[in-house]
Length: 286
Length: 270
Image (cartoon, rainbow over all chains, first blue to last red; front, side):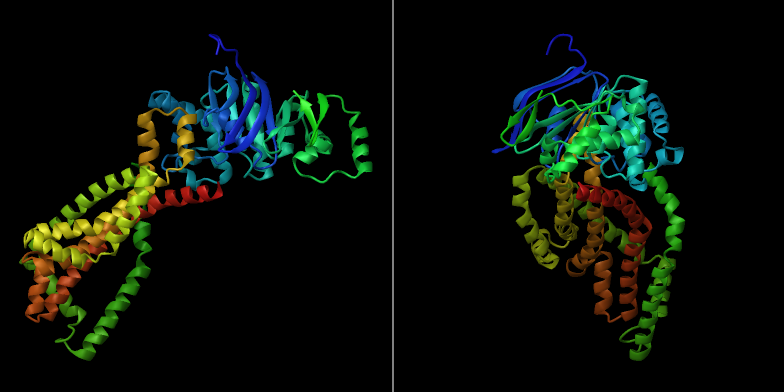
């Protein structure tokens, strides 16, 4: 830690094990301010462990995590709202922890709740009375009301239907437009990663390593569904990515056709870095 | 506050929803009436006779109110001690894996020992004063409360700790805003069960060991073969319990269990 840490998250040479079982190995990543980085991988690939390490919820065993961001908050996989507090009090939780006076924090929570599309009634209700989508909004509001400069997302939208999920994406992107907010998200949904992230990292194997990197130059706000579908298909056509998700290899003809069609893409082309062949597939040196 | 408001708002609908229960209770009374008609008032007085006797006592003063007061005092002291000790010890035991493993068989033994056995011991230790019923109530309620507290502390899932850390909650907020409400949501149903059993156990203890209180009055009327008075005393005990349970505790319990159910399903999903 330097005296004036620059606002960025840098993970280098990270490895982690639960008892004798190694789950993460040789992880390097760099997240500058205002950018979005997505880690995708199959379930159980250690994504969640990596995120919990970054959040300081697990003790770092090997490697370095330098978090220069001033305010980090996290969205969990479940909303984890306190059932005995109203939605409004739940949103104000982090502000209360900072010692903000009751009136001020409720006002801030109220404004953020409204921005997330929660009406007066929903804000007064208790979490069990709210639908899943509403609960997710409350959880997002609880995180964003703290004005974080780094937000960690632990697959918070994975239980929502596709309409709700896209609403949550829009809310998140709107916040990123408003002020610099770096996001480190993990997901097993490749399309969600491609829709939101500036950089997608594929994590797989036991112990998990980074298998692929995709840089997307197109700003997330200007991506449409067709673009996201195309990029997702392209990413999923990579043999290393297919292997990571345990997908069967594409038939040869189809794979080459996909590749040739991808040549025409301009913005946000796949950047495989310097690929080198490892024992179990193609890997990107980062 | 919100809890209190919901409780007050819930009363009318709750009472209206009680018609079904009322009808089923009246059916029971009708059955009693039929049996009384078949066997005669020496074996079983009619509900009307019983109710008249009870109403007469209520109007005259007499033994009813003092006896209920004595019994209530004993039940309350025993219950209060059990709630205090059981909650504290249970939560403390729940904090540690070893302590809860150790406590579990003790609890099984305590729950398995019939209250009447404790009563016999208590009569030898405490004689015929307040001590015997109070101790019997205490020992009968303790394990129930203890288990509630232990479960509450054991189910403090890691996600609440993670939440507290991720949102940098200071220690007093962790306790007051997160841990305490969660533990109370487990303790409260246990307190209600304990209240019900305290009321039953205290009458039993008085019947055998004391010469004051509802239990003692019950013993007297039984000795005089006064069936109407016996049934009236039983009716008084049951009515008090029903009033406590359905007017006060059940609505609060429903409110609290709503949180718990939702918390439970969230854990299953995780």
